[in-house]
Amino acid sequence: MTDSEQPKPASDSSAKPWQPPWAKAAPAEPAAEPQGEQTPLTPATLFGSSGNAPNSATNTLARSSSGIDGGGVQGVNLHALLKLAIAMKASDVMIAPGRTPSARIDGDMTPVTSFPVLSVGDADMLLRTALKENQLKVLDETWELDCSYELDDYRFRVNVHKQLRGLAAVFRLLGEEILPPERIGLTEAIIRLTDLEQGLVLVTGPTGSGKTTTLATLVDKINREQAYHILTIEDPVEIVHKEKYRCVITHRELGTHTQNFENALRSALREAPDVILVGEMRDLATIELALRAAETGHLVFATLHTRSAAETVNRIVDVFPSGQQPMVRSQLASSLKAVVSQKLLKRIPKGRVAAREVMLGTAAIANQIRTSKTHEIYSTIQSGFEQGMITLEQSLAELVLEGTADHGDAYDAANDKEVFESYVQSLKSRREGRGKRR
Image (cartoon, rainbow, N blue to C red; front, side, top):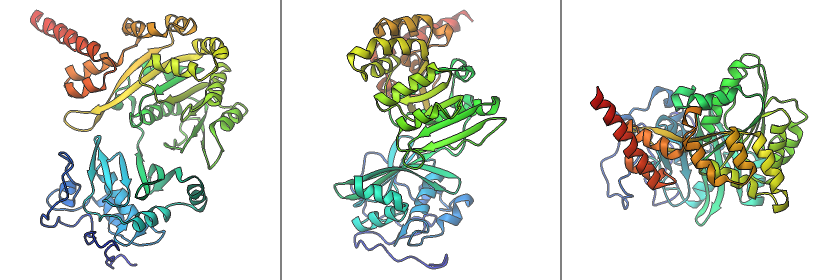
């Protein structure tokens, strides 16, 4: 199909006729049942009353073809959908049969109403035409697939899976730009972690909490300032670092360059790396090898899905059989240099902001890990403010007092609601006191 040709309507008779995403919004029609206060993505809400797409997106948005070029089916073009999401700074795009595609913007799901409702066949064809032959084989054998997808200079982390209504997928946009530390609110204590020559640094938090962004910024700082060999092992590769200064960078992806984290880490110890980035410490073998690498002169960055520093320590230790746990505590006490646990909140007036708990591997922290007194870690973080440590609740309270985050959102994100409220009141009283003295 040429650029000038109009695509045919989707085969699903219930779907609206396809229209270019940059065209003016059609007059209001009886809408489907509303979903909270969500604002549907339409050309008018996206690009203003003119309905015109940004120039950078126009060429791709203008094309709607079927077949592998663009991963399209009649009425829907995958590239057009992803370009639209990029233009709106969406973090995720969700595709599933029985509804229009949806995008997550500033944490909220929003229907993309300029695209039609997808039939089971449409969703299946749209996703399958975007996958490679070896990826299709994995999908058909296991019924789910994790992979990466590239569109121009943008990368997406993709999960394709079967669900009740058919084949579905989530495309997570990975930042094409690595942001400097000050742009993402990294403290001096976190930035100084890049000066370490060895040890284990963990960035933790739930899915979608900005762990990839934080790690990318730290690795980029090393890349710009050191003459190291940096090895990343990810599922999939999320941020592609270009070699700067005198660094050598090796990217390895599960399923493409290695079969699993365990094999890749075992091989890594013979690949002469200075810095190793492990996408996720998923199991005992991976954790064991990461600890060994940190003990043998490597700086290891890794992630876990834990909510706090103390929970992170317990999670690592509890993975091992009880007979091995004293030895693991000793290893962790000597090699763990920091845990950064973070959560993303809505930024006022728009965007997202991270609240971070920072635990540093001081002598006191190391002793608490070694002697199984992790319940004391929180109080040590509280009293370690001058060393650069901060609890999540302290971080959240500061965001509220700065006017950066909403009090209700911060309250919901706090692990200990009561402690969070006490910090808010304490910081507020302290600032009011300073104001009166002036």
